[in-house]
Image (cartoon, rainbow, N blue to C red; front, side, top):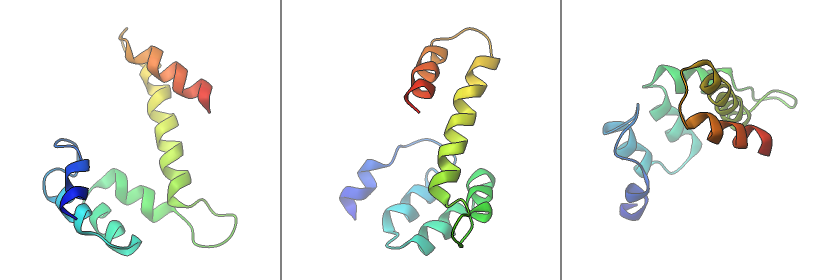
Length: 91
């Protein structure tokens, strides 16, 4: 678990307490409990369905990633637009 803690970034919405709790998590329920502390992640986990045909949390993260890449085109010019264009083309 100490090696797992080194993999998490030292910035972001969940840092520092959330990343420590994620490094200690052993199952999806523990990860979901950590995600409840942040509004964006809370909505991703709460919208994920349990039945067949519903979107799971991986699908929700994928949709959020695509939305962030699309939003990159709405801002002033920066090099992130090129990265987002490549990532969208990959999908």
